[in-house]
Image (cartoon, rainbow, N blue to C red; front, side, top):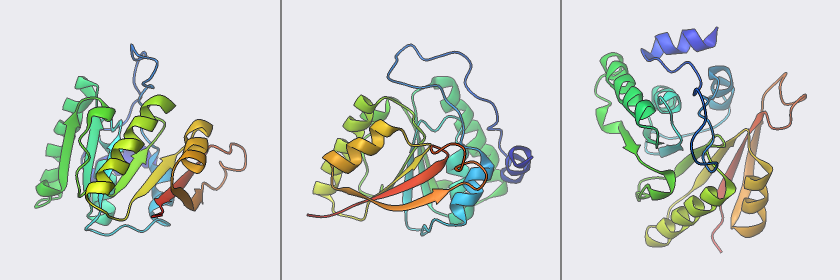
Length: 203
């Protein structure tokens, strides 16, 4: 029910998963984060309007529109699939008809996630298992290189986090688990049904 409610509220069309599979095994099929889970997340997680969240594998842009609507934060959607990218742009135009004067808060990037140039303004990064651990490692390294040039507070939000992502962050990086957001009625039966928030510790 929330899928229809929020799409209508935001004036976008983000329902539906990806049909078929990507040619590369490094990139996983697109599936949007359920609005019901985003609702629980936003009731717990704090963001400021000055934050900028990057969603890797943004698909049709659901997370971007939801985050901007709830927090009025800036958002960046990174998408390699050309069809999804154009759907995200179309959704952006529809969203801005409802939420005017927020155009400068949006940016959609068409290309591979590991080739996205991390901006000094980017300080929140969202991952819903969009790609393999190999690609994830490259992106985390890109983020760390960016922080070396422009030091700032960094947090990673992992939804349905893979064991590989967690092991890498906790054993081979300076990221520390800050918060866990469990999903009532789901996390008890499936330990992956949760959000993990990692923050970067400065050594």
